[in-house]
Structures are given as structure tokens and as C-alpha cells.
Length: 328
Image (cartoon, rainbow, N blue to C red; front, side, top):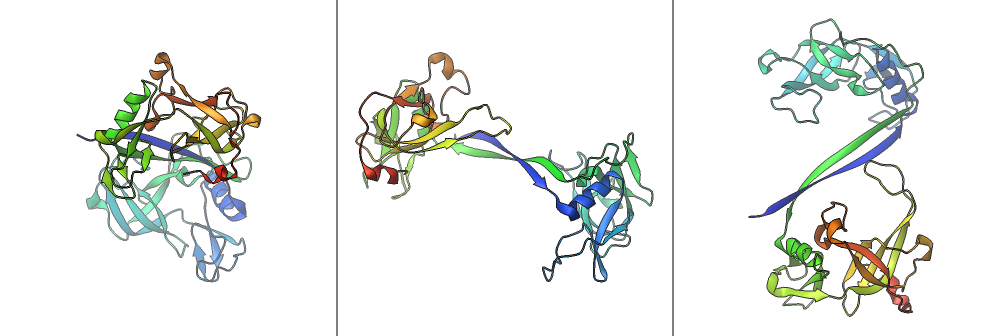
């Protein structure tokens, strides 16, 4: 039975909004919705350029709505955690009064039977508004806007920047070769797989040869050397983001294992200052202790298991100009 591993990646963003989108977001804090004039048309949300010609639009703002008419809709019977409402609702294209283009937003319609084209809807405003599109929680049926809870009033300063996190969750199958490689790492072994056709050796626990499309089972396993040479490296200056624990510049190195064509990439270096790392440096594997193996941070993770990284082994550097070309 295939085992799956779930991972979530979060990306922080800081976006400068500019004079057009910034004005739109600032107006939302005052419970006003702005469009921008484009000839005879009023575009909502306002755009910086004509969507047809690409010509820059003058910031000629027009207040619209806040009431509007549903032009089309689709029902969401089972919302996910990323949806704006946690009960069944509709996504709808709403043409606000005075606007030419419709606005896409959520409608708290109660049931799909109550949703019809031509339905009049009004915004449900968030009590505390910060200058984001979800300052409008959703639209509700009728002509009268609502406010959820207390009302903190408009922003004291123009909204110029948007900070937010985008995240995505992956659920990937874990090959049996990966599990075997992790077990081997607890015994201080680097496990490789040799293709019976092309004789290439692979590491990383994928369990197949990408050249010959051959599945590589336990009979293909070989022990790899635990010493090697740094071929390339990058010095990373840490910035603040969710989950970042580093505070000082750190290195991610590529290590060519002795007597093989196997390069282990993006590896940490141990007891080696960033400004002392160099191409050709000889290194040996460093393994997590039994106590660290029980810590989720105890090792490089994935098929590398208990491998913490690499540290100098005291041998003379390798002087080979071709080393810098070995990253795969």
C-alpha cells in the first residue's frame, strides 16, 4: 500500500499597491467602492491600464454601488478552508450600480434555489476594515448594506501596501526506496540504486532510473561513500518568513561522492563558517544522534533521513577546474 506525505509551503508577499489599487483599497475602509473611468466605461475594480489597448488610464475615480445586480453565479455547496464563507454560498458576477464591468464576489444566498440572475444584492462589510477586498465579507440579498459587528471607521492613512501569505499543500506518494534509504541512514549509510541497464547510480530514494524508465528495487541497492568534494555552493542570507529559524548567513553545498557520479545537492555544512567554504574542499558526512532522530528537524529529511550535512575531513583540497560543472 502506497504511503503519502503531506507538506505545506507558505510564501509571504509584500505588494506595493500603487495609486490606483491603493485608492480602491483605501476607499473600502470607508465602505465605499471605486471604479475608474475609461471613456464611457466605468471599470470595477479599477485598473491602471485599458484592458483592450494597454493605454495607461488617468486616475479618474467614480464611486459605484454599493448595491448591484447578479449577472451570473455558481453555487459552492461544500466550501474549503480557503473559501470566504464556511457554509454553502455562491460566487457571482455582480454589476454594481453605475459600473460597466461586473465584480466577482461571494453571495450569502442561503440556498441555491434563491439565487437567480437579476437578484439585487448589497455588501456585508467587515466591522474592522484594513484595505483588502475581503473588507466586503460577502454580498447579501436586498438593497441595504450590512456591517458585521462594530465599525472602526475609515483608515487614518492611505493604504499603500498589502501583506499576505499564499500557501499550498502537497500530498505526494512516498516510494518504498525512500523508506529503505531513511532506515539505512539511521545506520550511518548512504543508500544508492544502480540501474541494471545503464549502470548509472542514483541517490535520493526515487526508486527508478529516469533514463531507462526501470524500477529499481532492493536488489539494485548499493552503499555510497560518505566522503566527497564540494563542487558548488551558495551562501544564503536569511530573511524573515514563516518557519525561518536561521539568523546568520548559511551555506547550501553540492557534494560529489568519491568514486561515483552522484552529487548530493543543497546540503548544509557543519562547523564550517560561510566565508571559509570553497570549491574542491574535502568533506565527510555528519549524522544525527539517536536523540536528534526523534526530532523532526534532526536530519536533512526525505530520503537523506539522519544525514545532517557535511564537515571538513582534513584532507587536502581537490584542484580540478571541472568541479564547478558538477551540480547534477
